[in-house]
Length: 166
Image 1: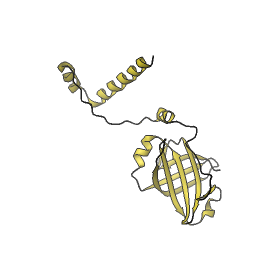
Image 2: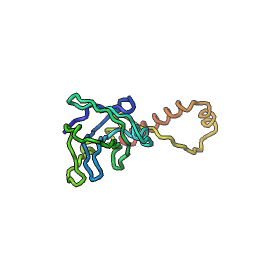
Image 3: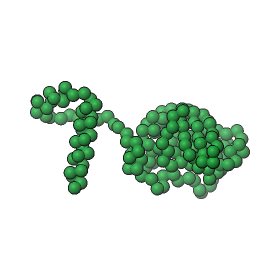
Image 4: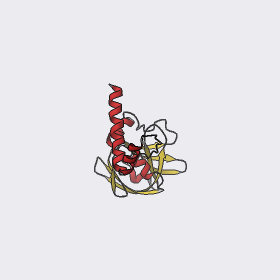
C-alpha cells in the first residue's frame, strides 16, 4: 500500500494525521481517492470548496498532482475525501485498487483521537454570552479590546478546569 508523506492543498501544506490513497473501481468508472484525517480547522476551511489543486507526495518519492473534488466525511473525526475521475487506472499501478464490492476498505480513524488532533490545531468558535455583572466590571470590559477579552476568558476557563479536576 502506498503511504502518503505530505499533502498540499492549493499550494499550502496541511497537517495530515492519517491517510489512505487508492484507486476506487466502480461500475461507473475509476477514481483516484485520497482519504485524510485532518484538523477541524482544515475541514472548516475547505468544506465548501468544489475543486482543489492537490499535490500528494508519497513516501517512495512519487509526487501526484490533481484537481480533485472535495467531500467532508461524517464520522467521529474530521475527515476529507478528495477524489478525481481517472481515464486510465493503469497510470496508478503503484496504488491499491479497491472495488465497490470489496469487503476491505481503508479505516483511517483507527488509533487516533480528537483530543490528539486538537493538541496540534485547536479550532476557535464564536460564542455570545449574556452576563449580569456589577457596573464597574461592565465599564472595564467595554474598555478592553476583543483579543484581550478572548485571552482573559481562555485563561479563566483553563484555570477553572484545573481547579475543578484537582
